[in-house]
Structures are given as structure tokens and as C-alpha cells.
Image (cartoon, rainbow, N blue to C red; front, side, top):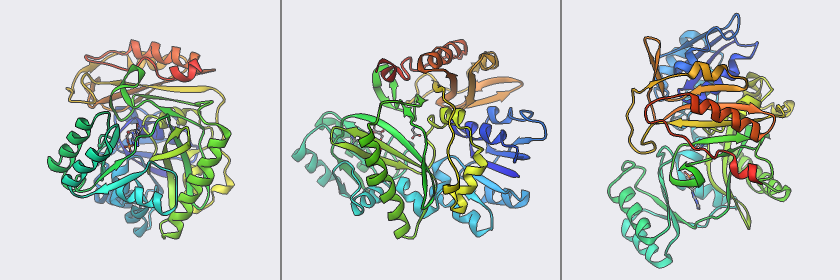
Length: 433
Ligand code: AMP
Ligand code: GLY
């Protein structure tokens, strides 16, 4: 089979790494990929691997390539091509692409549409109000006070949300999003103001074939940049799986019966069945789980440790999603723990410089239990350089969280680049429990 992976982050390196292990795959292309995906060449005899210089949001370019090469299956990593409708365009051309349609991707593409969907099906979420006028939004903040959460409508790379502890912060967020158009005119034309949810945040992932869903093993992300969940939100500073003891059985029941199943049946009813991976971002409040958001793709970095522990052939799963046959699959997980530590550029999630030389990646990756996925890296004359905010996903597997942490942190320390920073407490709260 010929497979195309769309994207260039740590998530896509992990997906490509997993697909490269499938005996069914003979050719693997990654567009645009990164130095880590390029290095998958030679990972298995009889497998051809190549990075293709087409950006992940160049849907027409990707379609052209897939047609020319007669790609059998395209696995889409990031949300932007999904929200643009890559799966519909491929289908129209008679090509198979794994991921939700444009209509189903609206769950991530528009927070306003997502909240309205939740309301239509009575799915538990934070109480909210939608605003298209800045003055009214300011007035509402005066009325209800802080803490309060302000969200802009469209995609903002995970940065369009302000959890405001004070009224001043809330007013400032409205001004930035709606009046100064920080995330563009479109995204700032509607705002959601919603109640703050307190509790433990958890990501629940499910493979979906439209009607059936398979929930993946538990994983937890660490969104804030600094230890102890302090500082601004990032794309994700680390994750681990499994995350035991986070959800009670009662919570799990609610997630399935009041969140996952109504989501799938609601989308079927609306003529946009969900195919691919559904990411439910939940807050476990003292009144039970609440949906914070849906994403229409794997979490990054949660995907990296999950792929390390998934024992099934990922090609089989993707095909079963597309063919409506997920009921024929049982997910199989290794019984170890996998952890991912994000090594980030100095200044991230604010501004940072690229082009810092990176050392000791291969040495660190050669240690037992370590897998290093590339995210923001580039390679010139055999030397690796930083080329993004999140640079490397340093992953490790161990018999338990303590063992996995030890190995991952030894590797994270050994790898060097100017400005490198990472969180030291990935998995610590769970470990303490
Ligand atoms: P989102 O892009 O909607 O996932 O929001 C980004 C992050 O903001 C989430 O992962 C949460 O940590 C936080 N957040 C969003 N909405 C709320 C809320 N209603 N209450 C508390 N925290 C929230
Ligand atoms: N890990 C959070 C995200 O992918 O959005």
C-alpha cells in the first residue's frame, strides 16, 4: 500500500513511525514531514519513505500528488486541512483519506458552532453566551464579573482562549480579539463568554466510523508552559498514557452515554457522520465531566505516547473507520507506561528564534526505551537545527510512570540546544496519587 501522511509535527512523526511498522505499507510519503520522518527511510526492509515538499494546507497540491502517485490511503494529522475539506476533496477524486469531512470538522473549526451543537443535544458543557458586539461583551463582563472565560470563534492554534481571573483581563481579551482582531477579522467577529470550569482536565480520544466508536486508552496533556500548571497555555508541553485514576467509572459512563454517543448520533442526524479520531477535551468537575472543546484530530503531544503503546496495525484501524467496520476491531495496548516531554525553544509560547544547533538526539534516542519524535526541526549538512516553538517530543516507555519519567528526563537533559526548556513535572500529579 502507498500511504501519505499530511503534517510536519511530533504528532505526524509518531503517526508515520507507527504506519512504517505496518507490513501492509510499501511506500510512505509525508507532506511536508520533518527530519525525523525522513529518517524513517530504512526503518524496515522493503519500505520506501520520502518527505514531499507540499505544505499541509495546500489541499490542491496534496490532491495532485495523491492522484499522480495513486496513494491508497491519506492520513491527515492537523486540523487546518480537515477544516478546509481535504477529506471531501479526496473522496470526490476517488481517493481514500482518513479524517472527518469538512462539515464534521466544524466541531473544531468554529467554537460557536460547536457550542450550539452541544446545546442542541444537551451535552454537558460550560454555560455560555455568544456575542457579536464588543460593547455588549464588555457590558456582560461587568454584569457577571470574574473569573470568566473568553473564546474567539475560529482556529487560533490553541491560543484563542483567555481564562480571565480578573475583569480587567476579560475586558482586555475582548478588546484584543474583537477590536484589535488579534486572531484575524473572521475569528474575532464572534466571541463566546462562558463560565469557568474547575477540576482536572483530561483528553479522551475515540476512533470513529460514523456510527461506532472505540475509546483509546487514557492520556493526559500538560498545556501550561511552566511546572505546576503555571504560565500561558501552549500547544502541549508533555503527555503520558495511561493516566490511571483520573476518571471514576461513573465519569466514564457519562463520557460514553452523555457525550460520545450523542455526539455521533447528532452528527449522523445532521447528515455529517464523524469518521476519524475524535478528541474530547473534558473538565472533570464536581458535577461530572463537561466538554471544553472537541478537536477533530489527534492531540499533539498525546498522540506520541499513545502510538508507542498501540499494538494494532494503524492501517487496519484507519480503513475500518472509513469503511464503517470499527466493530471488527479491538484495540490492544502494551501494559507499560509511555511519556512524552516537549523540548521547546526559548521564549515559546511567545516569540522565539529558530536556527539553534541541536546536539545528541541520536545518542539520546539510542538509550533503551527512548523514542525521539521531531516537531520543529530542520537539517542542513547533517546538522539539526531548531525550526519551531515545540522542537522535539522526547518519549520514553517504562514499566510504570516513575520508570518512564526517569528515562525520558535523562534523554531530555542530554539533548542540547540554545534556549531549550521543558517542564520537569510531566505526570507528577498522577505519580503522587
Ligand atoms: P480550548 O481551546 O477551548 O481547549 O481552551 C484552551 C484551554 O483553556 C483548555 O484546554 C482549558 O485549559 C482552558 N479552558 C477553556 N475553557 C475553559 C472553561 N470554561 N473553564 C476553565 N478552563 C477553560
Ligand atoms: N495537546 C493539545 C492539542 O493537541 O490541542
